Image: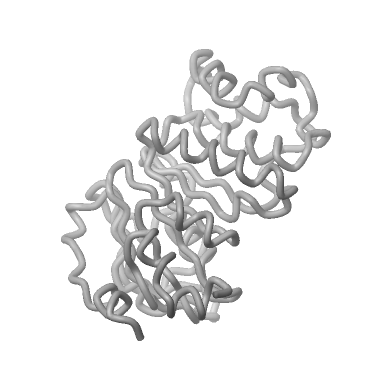
Length: 251
């Protein structure tokens, strides 16, 4: 183990009240199947954090657990000072968290605009300004406002899914494999879009298969292995750590 990785593992965790999102000693899974074993994770206000690791490491389970989509088995999830460990997704969305799953993340039979309106379903009235803000961020959606979501390309669907999650102006955006299935020439554009969302003040917690590019862009990264924390550090530090590169980034 490299000195950098050792420091990452042994670093003291901040008090949960100091983080926008603080996950402490989290055990979670699906039914009787435990996937996460004592996971710790933090996201500061406005921070960009990436979770990487091998297939089956529990990366997506962390995201789903924060959004109340797994079986809670122990530990603590604190968001903006409130314990949300055992809340339902329909309650969590009111707290200021948006979630974009990897697949099945648009309503295919609805138009682009109708999908965005669904993103604000908890409001009495859909703010027109929010829709226009999404169109400003993703101009192609504005051009296809009346088009059925099921006819969009893969990249356009991801933009729509993110746009819908942004309709409530969340403090934290959870992104599960946003580049999955995209053509190589569209991956960089997708990352640029996410950079822009974060630059405008929205904290991002992202699981990503393109680990090298994700770590290059983020503030901090976590490496999960078999449902447990293995390393945590600044994105560039993890990217340049020889052991992390050899074991998890393909050299």
